Image (cartoon, rainbow, N blue to C red; front, side, top):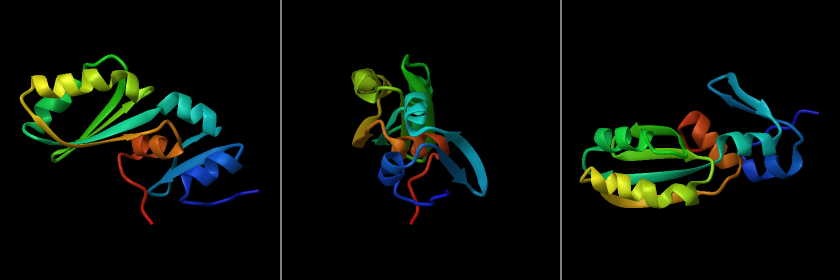
Length: 123
C-alpha cells in the first residue's frame, strides 16, 4: 500500500517505510527510525551579523552533520541537537554575530525532511 501525506508525525506513526520526495526525486527511502537515526534533529537560527562566517565556524563543530545558510537563516543538522547546542551558540558568538531567534526541532521525520531538503514543509 502506498500512503501519501505531508504530515510527518502521521507517516512516522503509521508507516513501515518512508520515501521523502523532493522536486520529483526520491531523496531518501528507509524506515522512519533509521532515517531519524541517520539524519537526527535540527536547529534553525536567525542571526544578525556575518552569516557566511558563522556557517563556516559551525561546519567544523563535532556532532554537526550539515549546515545550510540562506541569508541570515542558518539550519544546522545534528544527530542530537540538544547535546551540541552550547557549542553552536558559542561558535556563533565567537564570530561576533548575534542570535535573533532559535528553534530546535526534535529528532523526528520533520527534522529529517528539513535536513534533507533544507526547507520547511510546504502545504
